[in-house]
Each structure stands twice: as C-alpha cells, then as structure tokens.
Image 1 (cartoon, rainbow over the protein chains, first blue to last red):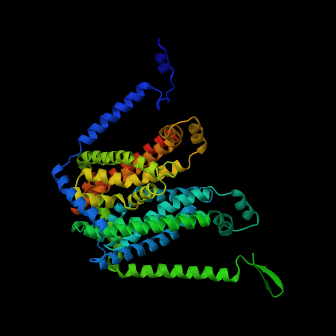
Image 2 (cartoon, rainbow over the protein chains, first blue to last red; image 1 turned 60 degrees about the vertical axis):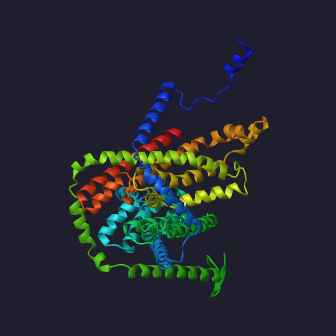
Image 3 (tube, one colour; image 1 turned 45 degrees about the vertical axis):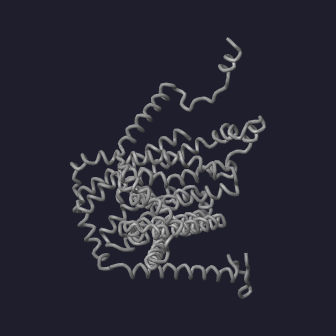
Length: 269
Length: 271
C-alpha cells in the first residue's frame, strides 16, 4: 500500500450518529420515501401562485408604506379591545390558576384533589385556543367576552401547570418550620410556600400576559373580539397596506411586552 | 427592616411608610386598570346571550353527541395533509433557521454591528406573528391549500428555532473553541468541531419540540383555508354539522396526544 492510501485509511472520521448501519440506512431511506410522498402529495396551482407573487410584492410594499390612517378608527378600536381582553383574562386566569395549582401540587393536595386538578390542566392544555374560541363563541355569542373566557381557559392550563411544578420543588424545611410553630394550613401557605414561589409566579404571569396578547390577535378570526377580526377583514379586502400596519403594531407591542417583561423578571428573580 | 416605636414598644414592620404607600398605590392603579378594562368588555358584550349560555352549551352538546363515526372515512386524507404540513414546515424552518441562528449568535455572527441586529429583527418578526395569521396572509397571497399551510408553519417556526438555537450557541463552553483554535483550525473548522457538537443535542430537542407544536397548529390552519383537517372542521361548523365536528375534535385530540407522546419519547432518547 502506498503511504497516501494508509493515510486515508487511518484518517479520523467523526463517528456516525446511529451506530447500526442497517438502521441508519433504513431510516434514511424511510425519510427519503416519506419526503417524496409528502412533497408529491401537495397540489400546487402554479398559475395561482405566480399570480399571487404580484400580490406578495404589494404586501411587502405595504410594509414599507403601511397605511395607519385610512382605517385608523377600526385599528385603534381593535387594539384597545385586544389589550383590555389581555389584561382581564390574565388577571382572571391568575385568580383561577392559584387554587388549581395548589390542588395540582402533590406535596400539598390529597390524591383525589390532585387528580381532579391535573385533569383540568390536561384538558386546558390539549385543546388549541382557537378551537376553544369557536365553542365559546357558539355558547356566549360573538364579542370579547367569549375571547376573555378562551384566554382564561388557556391561562389556567399554562399557569397552574408551571406553578404546581414550582410548588412541588419548594424547600420542605420552611414548611416544616411553620408547621412546627402550630400554623394553620393557610398560614402554612402564606409563610411557608408563597414567599418561595412568588418570584416565579410573577415571572410566569408576565410571560402569560405576553402570550395572551398574541393569542388575542388570533382568536378574533373566529369572532371572539380583538384585533384579529380587523386583520381578517383587511386581508379579505386585499388591503395589504392596512394589514401591514396592523402587523407592524402587533410586532412592536409584542417586542415592548417581551423586553419589559424580561426586564421585570430579571429584577424580581 | 424599619422599626417604629408605638406606645413605648418597638414594632417591626416589613416596609417603611413610604414604601408601603407606594405598594398600596400600585395596587390601586392595577385594580383600577382591571376594572376599567372589564367595563370596556362589558359594554361590548350582549349579556342576553351570556345569560342563556348554559342552555346553548347543553344544546350544543346534544347536537354533538353521538359523533357520526362514519365521517371518519373522509378524514384520513386531511389528516395526512395535516401531518405533512407540520413536518415539511418544520424541515423548511430548520433549513432557514439554522443559518439565521449562526448569524444571530454573538460568538458566530460575521458582524455584531450590522448582521446581528438584522437577524434578531427577522427572528422577532417571525415569532410575534402567530402561524394562523401567517396562514391568513399566505392564503390571501398564494391562494388556499396545503402549500400556504406549509409556508405559514415554516415562517412561524424559523423564529422559534432561530431564537432557541442562537441562545444555545451563545451559552457554549468557550474552552472547546479555544482548544480547536489553538490547533490552527480555520473558522469553519472551529464551528464544525467545537460549536456544532455542543449545540447538536439542543438542536435536536428544539426541532422535535417545534414539530410537536406544529402538529397542534397545523390542525387548525384549515380554519383560514390553509389545508389540513381544519378545512373539514370549518366546513362542518359552517354547515352546523356538529356531529361531524365532534369526530374532528376527537381526531385532533388523539393526534395531539400522539405527537406529544412521540416527541417526548424522541427527546428522552436524544438528551
């Protein structure tokens, strides 16, 4: 053998991700077959797409020259509605989440209560907010009330789950200490548990406030109030400059909310 | 901690007077804000409809049960579309999101001053708009169908993958980078041998996590016309065929639970 060939043979190569070569090639083949099937299964109307490119261009131009003024009233009303929905839903959601979280913490609640609360959380987490919104609109009629209920429903699943996990992780000795002084169950919560989970609770609530605003922009599409309805109308009328204006405001509000909430969270924790 | 003297004895307080007043004022403002917000919502609500909500709910339930199981035959194709929207969307998002993350991370970006802020802006814009809104936009531009759904999912996921991956990149152990650099390796070699192996598990976790979220989201994209099982849902609801809608709800529930289980298994195996 020439030295070059020996060198090539001895050269270090990174080990493959999957050690078994049969499994490796089978997975690769499976992925290729799946991709071919999936991509070929997509019906594409190229005529419609090329027609749409011109519209896409108009939309991008809309971002450069967003039209805030011609539908200012509707945009303003929509955002006010979204913001008030966000505030009310977060506060109500927080009020409901705390008892549910206490019930879903294994170290505080008896087993039947634990299962009940965990079931509630699982129910809230499996359904998409938009589906819940459809059902609530059917029950409570169009408007922001159905939207608020939807957001509360989503908030409870999110906050209770994370808060319950935090409560389960607390330092037991502080609870023991309060119990040793003869404190009642509520005193135990107030002095043994609450101070330990408070920073996390504030952080989570702010984070959820942020999420609720984003969601409130969506559930309007099915009639549950907020800016989503205005946005939907703008797209239906092909008014891309108005739609661009709304999207820009959403992006700015989300950015402000994200930065201020992460600043507050850093300050609290 | 402040101490005040009341009738000869020292009393400990948690806060001094001014801080306590400020805290009360804060609560006052917050409460007023919530009450005012509630007023706005209350004004715009038809309370008549809310009062008979329990009747509506019972009525709705009565119309949804029993589900029309035979409808299931027509759901397999939309379900396959839903799966494809989520998977292809995630793949496109990975292809676009990974370079974006390298441009956005402080330790890999070509220029902290010019490229990084631009990459961060793309990430924020992609993240702050829900995939349903992206779908609304795309349906309006390229027409209804699965393609709009795939692109909507991809556009929303780019920001997610980009953000989590660039954060992982910024948190890597610099020791490995220095070690590779000291061998005289070029920049691509440093990235390939010191950085990529460190973020690879995080990357796999992020991708699978996003795929799981995308399965959830793609089930409802059809509501705005972007393909998948949501299209059927929209049709059933607008025809008030609640018996069919309840079958779809159950199918969505099972799909979401299955994808959650699968992604948890995969993440467990990787990490």
